[in-house]
Amino acid sequence: MKNFSDLEKKIDVKFNNIDLLCQSMVHRSYLNENPKFHLDHNERLEFLGDAVLELVVTDYLYKNYSKPEGELTSFRAALVNSEMLSKRAGLLGIEEYLMLSRGEAKDKGKARQFILENAFEALVGAIYLDQGYEKAAEFIKKNVLIELPKVLEQKLYRDPKSHFQEDAQEKAGVTPIYEVLKEWGPDHDKHFVVGVFLEKELIGQGEGLSKQEAQREAAEDALKNKGWE
Image (cartoon, rainbow, N blue to C red; front, side, top):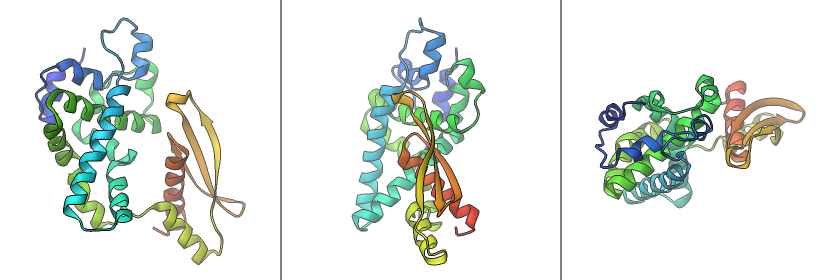
């Protein structure tokens, strides 16, 4: 069993109910190999944490930036996307506390990013249930909103699909087309690989838990490959 008191120190939150913290780290696959484990997987906590995270970030942006809705939406998307949340989870050292099946534990690729993102959201949900909204908001400000200055300075909020389309039309005279190249997994854990094409040429690929996320990553990949960043 993991030492979750060490994780409490890393995230600077002392839980009243340590089982909530433990459950936030339990991946569905772990229960397949350990069906008698006393806790459920973290998907319900992830569902809750996702909503809390979005509310806290939205509230902060609304109160601190007098920008139109579209810009604030772009700022928020840059802060709560899979890449950002998995990065923040990594910085907190969450990975060593994940409870995974042996197969999932070996996979260090794209799937691990999604697992880390989901665990981060589940952790927010656990903090909210155990400590309330203010403590959850404090955690989010310290571990997510801290990235906002960098997001604004480096313009990481620019939507890569719009960026790539503008550049493709301007520089190549072509409108990009996105196609699903591959999809797999059950409904609760669907994965998509999407390619973006200029005419018949594959320019970039992306993977995501939704077609939209995979398209965004494909556009980012295409911008890199074309040197249009």
